[in-house]
Amino acid sequence: MQYSRYSEAALREALQDTPVVLIHGSRQCGKTTLAQTIGMELGYHYISFDDDNQLQAAKADPVGFVQSLPKKTILDEIQRVPELFTSLKASVDQDRQPGRFILTGSANVLLLPKLADSLAGRMEILRLRPLAQCEIAGQRPIFLEQLFRGDFSAATQRTAFPRLGEALAGILCQGGYPAAIARRIEKRRSAWYQDYITTLIQRDVQDIAKIRNLDSLPRLLALAASQTARLFNSADLASPFAISRPTIREYLALLEQIFLIEQLQPWHSNRLSRLIKTPKMHLADTGLACALLGVNSKTLWQDKALLGQLLETFIYQELRKYADWHDNDLRFHHFRNKDQVEVDILIEQGRQLAAIEVKAAATITQGDFKGLKKLKDACGEQFAAGVVFYDGTSILPFGERLFAVPISILIPHATTANAPQYFHDKA
Image (cartoon, rainbow, N blue to C red; front, side, top):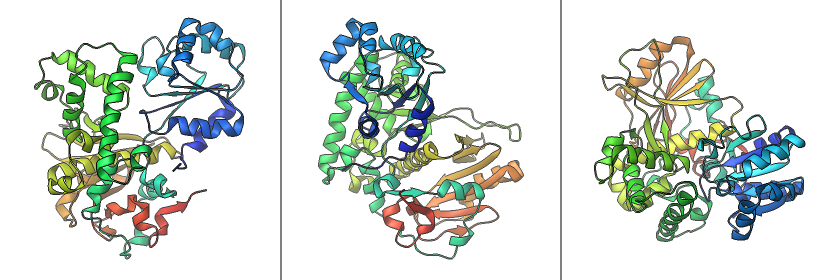
């Protein structure tokens, strides 16, 4: 099944005024499908560097290869041919017509020192992540708009949201990769993720870095999965390996470069003291994390601590996907101080701040709002709203601009029949 991607609008806009558009994100998240969907409509020629003949031709003569390309071309998996970037720059400088090239990359080429500045001022970058739940359902969310308005009042009397219960574990194990979702049997989805991990490490990693201890990467990635939604500590991740800490840090940077892990930076403010400055780590996808950890929906449901970690990563990643389509620039952080007061996710929009806590439980108490209240008191009018996600059935006010919100608000197929105010039908 082919899903509508809400990054399509941003891609179309960028092609109207920018010579090169790069769509990057983890392998198999849908970059090629998105590029080809637009490219077929607009008359683009398609070349994939997964084709070894094209790859070798481009490497042998990058200048001639680029000169031979049609005016409108898609170059798929561009990270495999870093030699092309200088030639692409020269070609664009000769003809800056908008929409000349659509590039896709399964590695963050901007982190490669030789390429970081090659297309500066000539290229727009779109990040594509695995499917959001709303893309799977084909409906657009408006949660972020309501969050920054601090207005859930219209829904506080509704009881339209289902409690997910054990189904929540199934959603986390499914993840967001289209090819995995297409497999209806959980065991077959897990097999897809295992093959995916093997392919990434044997192929994509080797494309961008020649490392000696290749067999350490799957174990390191599995260890990282067990630490998702926790403070990033390279020493803890290095301890099981007979590899130096600097090398482990290099490997983690490599996993970040191919979009498998990411760091959520801490929030800083002169209004609050004793803040911890350590980033959090999140896996790119909870389905991938479950496969790495060898858990299925049943065993995950029984492990409440792991369920809580993966739920936090799930909500963080869903909101990052929403932010990719949001009209305004959003910045994500976490908050923790040395007194162990914390907030899982902070989102800044200009001078506004919204804060989010994540609980897997079906009940909620005033104590769950401790961190949100501290931020609200410190930030005053700049504090838009604070939300505690929980597995309940109602949106409940817990004070001015503080709300308990059901997790199922982010799962359109579970809510849209009775709660249409949180989603628009796809345009």
